[in-house]
Amino acid sequence: MRGRLSASGAVLVYGAGALILLFIMAPLLVVVSLSFSAAPFAVFPPRGFTLEWFGRVIADEEFQHAFIVSVSLAVAATAASFALGMPAAYALNRWKVPGAQVMEAILLSPQIFPILITGLALLQFMARAGLRDAEMNLFIGHVLITLPYLVRTITASLKLVDRSLEEAALTLGASPWRVFWLVTVPQIIPGIAAGCLFSFMISFDDFPISLWLADAQTVPLPIFLHSSMSRIFDPSIAAMSTLMILTGVLAVIGLEKLVGLRRAMGI
Image (cartoon, rainbow, N blue to C red):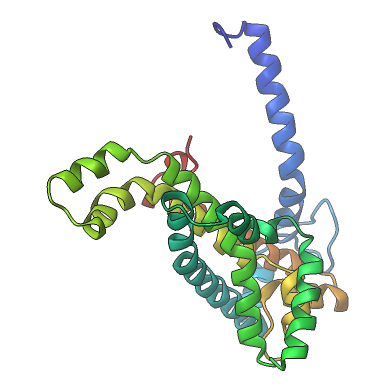
């Protein structure tokens, strides 16, 4: 846009933005407020204020187990997706790979198909293949749905790399490996960090894949939350959800402290 918005135009734009943000945040605000309710059942607006529900949830061994399963699974899936996505993105961006566009489409295809159908397809495949280890099946499924985020963000970051710096380093005698680690990687760290954040949150919050592949011994947090809601709906359910939201907020804060949120998102 040329020039600046007028005073009335600015009020209109910012007001519309605030209303849209409120509309998006309203469900989360309702859940968070319910988690502090002193009522013995979930009711809105909440009645009173208490932290008792958080104490009950944190002391619940089943919740602790589900939380550890989700965090461990998310960390493992993110690490594996990075190990696979980094070389894949680099090869597709820098090398003349035959059928590169087809291979990139295949890597990004889990973002295209409905994730519930993807989970059902994985269940059928693993059942026919005789894969009955729930932990391994969940790991494979979560890597499948998180890998596209690493590939996409790293590919986008590689396209913004200043190639002249790499060429200068090569001219001065640096090996291709040293150029990659000392010149290329520092320039794409924001993209790597953003991709890892997306992958972690997608895995941590995943329900459709976990619904099909989890078993009674390996229960991720979203499945535990859904199971708890089917038994009773009290403020402890909202407290669990609030802790999940808090985990996401802490991940974003960690990204901001590590590389800067605006830089990581390419803003």
